[in-house]
Amino acid sequence: MCGIVGYVGGQASLEVVIDGLRRLEYRGYDSAGVALVTNDGLFTEKRAGKLSNLDVALADVETPPSTTGIGHTRWATHGAPTDRNAHPHLGRQGRVALVHNGIIENFAALRSKLEAAGHELESDTDTEVAAHLLEAEVAAGADLTEAMQGVCRQLEGAFTLVAVSPDAPDRVVAARRNSPLVVGLGEGENFVASDVAAFIEHTREALELGQDQVVTITRDEVEVTDFRGNPAEGKPFHIDWDIAAAEKGGYDYFMLKEIDEQPRAIADTLLGRLSETGQLQLDEMRLSDDDLRAIDKIIIIACGTAFHAGLVAKYAIEHWTRIPCEVELSSEFRYRDPIIDRDTMVIAISQSGETMDTLMALRHARGQRAKVLAISNSNGSTIPRESDAVLYTRAGPEIAVASTKAFLTQIVACYLIALYLAQVRGTKYGDEIAEIVGQLEEIPAAVTEVLASLEPVRELAREMGAARLVLFLGRHVGYPVALEGALKLKELAYIHAEGFAAGELKHGPIALVEQGTPVFVVVPPKGRGPLHDKMISSIQEVRARGARTIVLADQGDDRVLPYADQLVALPTVPTLMQPLVATVPLQVFACEMAMVKGHDVDQPRNLAKSVTVE
Ligand code: AGP
Image 1 (cartoon, rainbow, N blue to C red):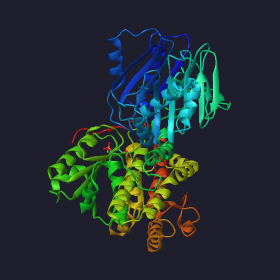
Image 2 (image 1 turned 90 degrees about the vertical axis):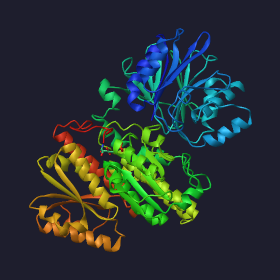
Image 3 (image 1 turned 120 degrees about the vertical axis):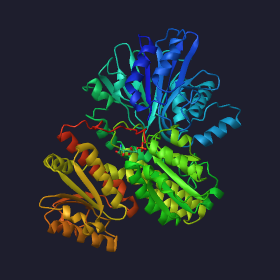
Image 4 (image 1 turned 30 degrees about the vertical axis):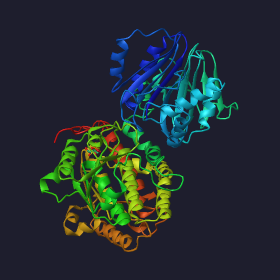
């Protein structure tokens, strides 16, 4: 999820673009860059790191006057956050500059074709491939708009593209598929951007673009077409958010926005990781097939929510690969003298990639010759850099301290790794793997369905504001979901919450239950035979002692109805997929209760987004 701005009008384009990027920096801050159309051609500058690094670079040079320009703040997906990989990227002759947000799934094949035709690409990005294709179209006689249409017809995946060229100095051309792009309609000036925060100080009149559309803006004109050049329409709207709300996309808190981004985050994490032949392709997996075949034990190390993702992953890893899998708190791992050797794979899960507990555990594992694989949401961060291999989640920046979209995408990434191991080691046939990937590909829609049905959960949170203790029960993969639901409530509402394996209740914790104690119960999918029956028994046990049961169960699971004081119906998904839908109501409950209590939802007391101390 990157930040993009394009401008054409009467103002100095550099100032407008830089100010716009500043408003979008929350969307990504691995690197930043600008491209300006000047009388002498294209002026470009780009730097790794925060926007301030670009400011410093620009202060050192004489920037020529320009009224047409584009800019980009990057959240890296392909290629580490370096100057070389920063956007904008240029075509072969440097006559076109392009910035991009999203993932071009077929970039590798396109890159091979370009290189076979003599193109030399400098970066590791998918974006540079599109820049070379765009310039090739212009060189073949297309104008910039036609060239953009032509390129979009070649690309697969999710992308927002914005381009300028000195051959078309009066315009900015942009396109979108599955990735945000909005037009700002000014007086004698126009804008394109990832979201309205970039131009809201200049105009509150905007145009929403549809799927697979190309837009060309000049000072006084906005022209929209489809990818074949047929005229199309955008949807005009007036922006009535203030600046702060605009940066949160109109949400009151980043956490609310990030909860709603989960379907897109899951879809992006899956993009491009299954080849046309149904083979998993994990391009950052730098471990050889022989290394992977030699693995005889897996240890997952992580903290907090990431640890809960590891607990979910354990069930899938063992079921699909038959490799023993332990899940360990990073802060405990190296002090228990773990049994590790060169055939141990340690998987370090970390959204920030900077958690010191996990980094120190990783270093210990490497010292014991284990193979270390990182799962992170932060490209180029320390933990992936110190690992043998990495699989990046593509949730986009997670600003709220309480982790939501990172959690779901960590589970998805773990599942992809488990399937990749099963593929390499032959414990699953290709069609079985493709079937499970197909199940994962249906999850974004299932999560969208859940998100649309949660007003009763919000009402429950508003009603339960005085609760002093809330319990969460789950079995099998529902147990880590119970732990995660409890952690969210602790973090956000500052009340005592505890998750249990439901079977453990009678061994002590049930003593906590008294009249009215709220107990959330994550019920296994209907087809889970004995587990489903046992969960019904657990619900009866707590109810018999006065608990108020909030039951999360499959739609149509009528066996739970007599024991549910509140029912949260979930879309029916396969057992191992249930955490991806069952967690969402618990996130929303905790978030709503925090708002009811007037807490700072995005920055809860005592907590930091990345804990870089042990
Ligand atoms: C979860 O909501 C918390 N923010 C916290 O538990 C977090 O998951 C943990 O600190 C691990 O962070 P990491 O994923 O960046 O390593």
